[in-house]
Length: 162
Image (cartoon, rainbow, N blue to C red):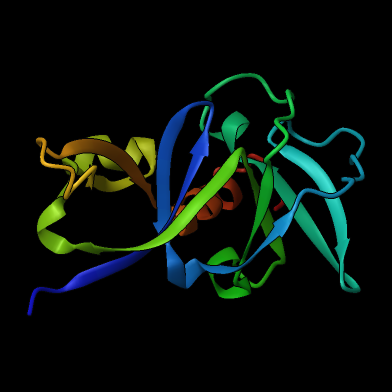
């Protein structure tokens, strides 16, 4: 039996992304975020999630997709396990969460080391859509991001506390 990888597939600014299911604790609806004065642009603020203060990161801003802001109606917060965030409570804002999926390893491609380390990319996932409809299956490319590496770089590069 072929090995599979479990990921959460989500969307930011009409691009598809995925992260390992093991780094996600839960997915919650968007709620009011309290801004933090003089915080870096990628730090949207904090929320009180069931009595725990949780830092909220605007992933679109952090990935240089677009300037921070612009709220879509389906935005969600993916709350990360503290181990993935160096022990901190962190959530990331995404435009929409599509699904949790199992991806066969043969449908993933790792990126060149020099490119992937700069872009925080673990690889590219090729998802087949439209199977069973009698036509050629359509392939969507999903950028598989390395969230622990992103968060680690924020701390080590001094872009501010997370």
